[in-house]
Amino acid sequence: MTEFSRRNVLGAAATGGMIAVAAGADALADGQPPYGPTPAVLAGAELPSFRFALGAVAPKSWDGGWAKEATVVQFPVSEKLAGVLMSLSPGGLRELHWHANAAEWAYVIKGQCRVTTIDPKGHSQIVDFGPGDVWYFPRGFGHSIQGIGTQDCLFVLVFDNGYFSEFGTFSITDWIGHTPPEVLAKNFGVPAQTFANFPKSEVYIAKGPVPPPLPSDPAAGSLNSGALTHRYQLLAQRPESYPGGTNRLVSQREFPISVTVTGALMRIKPGGMRELHWHPNADEWQYYISGRARMSVFGSHGRVRMEQFAAGDVGYVPQGYGHYIENAGSEDLELLIVLNNGTYESISLSAWIAANPHLLLATNFRVPEATFANFGTQFMPG
Image (cartoon, rainbow, N blue to C red; front, side, top):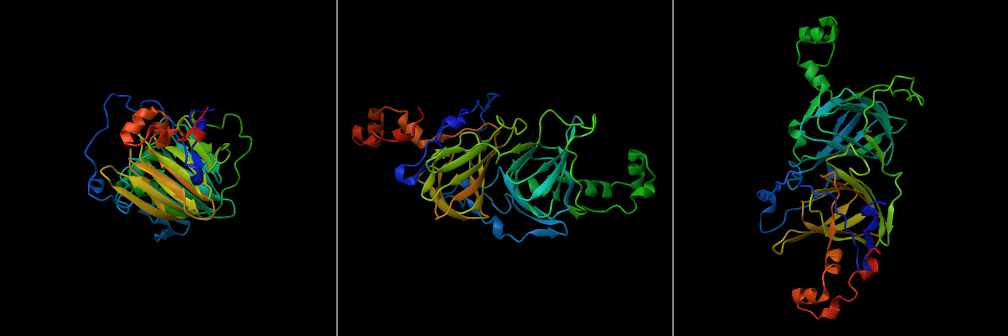
């Protein structure tokens, strides 16, 4: 049982919320605090919007699929994380490419896809993904994604850099299309005429036949996989259950290759709430899969902003900002949470209060000491 699983995360609103405390290793390994000026978008007297209606954005479409994005350009508060909602039809191929300025974390919502990767040591993998699966590619790793099966594959991509899309995607067709044929001939050992009909610009998403199934038993000596797999089956994980819902967490502890990203799939029951808390070491990016939500963000100096969310919306919470999420509907709320740190850390307001003497709390809040006799004790771990 991980440290995270020993903490209560989701509780019912009627019984006082939730407890969540999980501290990972010290993120300041180099001893230098990552302090800097407050981003301009957060420095005003009023907090900016922490909601972006990604689902309502008109997608960019190709024969093999479509994509819509939420970078800092469209969603100014989201400086540390960016996201893409993408769909690939069977045979639709997100071409071979890499990201020079961001790692990629993804969650498959429905359908199936096949992913190929290569790392700096020459290790390659070909792996099939289905609903509930997660992948992670470190910055610079080459990869492709192709729809397989009989239905469209829908997935969310999250990048640990809010600016990634503007200049960070390097596509193989774009590079080859802008390299002289004689150079390509020298590089690959084939005649220059071989490249006469290659695309002269970026393809991005192509459409081809659905590839055949992968062999269940690869031939001896045919694999060239690295020690760290790129796939984690999040839905196969036994969820942590709480009075107000369930949570599945995948950090670097569970998924060792995911050194810069932690993800969670959270389900909150009607009347339930993800309690008041903050993350000391990460910004939080959210994608609302189903249901309706209400999130409040606290940004110091009396600044509080509440937002309403529906399926297809994206939410964002800057590092260290206090927040909570309530189910605002009559059906279960399902959301994907992505943090830009492979080590998970969360501090709950309930746990903090419970950790202090009642006399101190009485002095702090100017109320009788007995006020705190029953604060959160029913949720504290044994």
